[in-house]
Image (cartoon, rainbow, N blue to C red):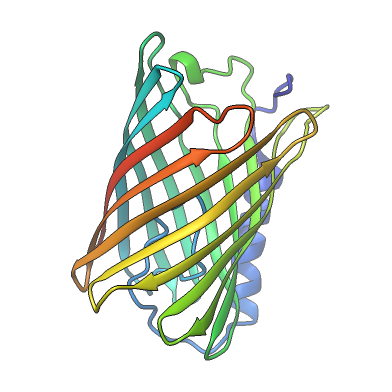
Length: 253
């Protein structure tokens, strides 16, 4: 990426607070959100964790790139519902074990705010600041913070089919930061009252290189507060040998 540093990612934190302020000043009709984790998948849903509720999402992933393998342990995201249209988010992330240089992938903080809702669709804003807390191969050594800003949309396409779309951008807080744009459309459906599946595309577009993924997975609702999943993805460009396979768990307390 780029070089440079910023010790305190103040603009990103302020933007996260701004999202929360907008939701507090102009709240949509308050309703209890159904249990809808942001995992699995490379994008996020528009659902907000219900008020006064803590939700934990975690998992494991195996990555392979032409024989070079990596194991992600953790993928931990903590979400807390401030009210029925705002949540605060803390990413504990993963410890990654590779064939060569292991390391901790670093923490993040953020917020998700529901901006609009109808009977068949919903739109939320998500702001996430990645903090320079990684170790090993994830140690940036220049205190760069990374910002992601996006909109998450969910819309019903029928009784058993829905569409989720993420659109936004990511960049490092540096003087010559390069912006990476993201576009993630996903189709979701259910097999029965407990089991569901999804399939989608995830694109990340930068000046020097693009990354294009296809992904899919299965989910199973163990009980109203617990979901397990299996997921996979394959990159479809010059790095077409890269793929991942993962397992996960989400629980609402």
